[in-house]
Figure 1 (cartoon, rainbow, N blue to C red):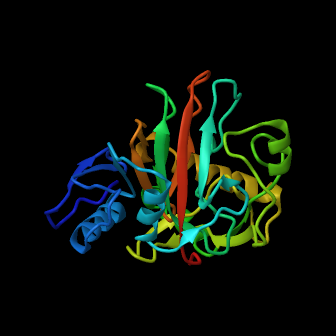
Figure 2: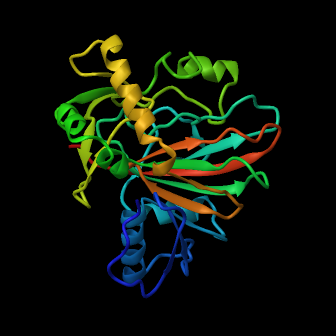
Length: 291
């Protein structure tokens, strides 16, 4: 569940989204540089609630990039084609004739990089009146909800995450999906970076020091195990982590800016708006090597 703040907020308002995670933040204009006190409160709200969002933001690409850089270095996506003129930004764009969206499987961004993105910043320009929510799962709660025996069994296990595989739910590689017109994010020739990485199944958050499961669709097997041996455990952990008790969802409106912590959350793009239009811009912030 979200951590109830022990210190009152003075400069911002924090309205919980769900018992599991999430909060709407008020009193903040994200299009302008945040002063030290406001940034500290927003940062605390993000750590406590995992997912936070701001309504009615008059954002544009330059302002979104400036906002992101207040949190750290921008993390460039290894595969997604950026917006022309803005290498930091990926566009998520669904038109009414597209058969499916990208991201409609539980995952954490850039899981397959040696140093995955710690934060994702997503801004909505256009969306349907209803549908197209993004769901989030609290991986702190998922870890805490395991038995002591399971915690012991997985404590030293590492998993292999792969950024480009036919084990994707479509059954295609990224290049094949691009050629076939699948998905709402354009793909490109990958950057010259490692896109297969080994990470612990249980990671310690570098800021909160809390333990969280670290799993998702990109994790293909457990180190030293066959895929056949790995599958039952990884599927169990994923089903467990995405129980309704651990999940909240953000309903998009134009002008909504949402940021989340990839170190302790999964997310899922809900594909329930056929024939509708939706356009968002995404920026990620560089993280550290999981431990």
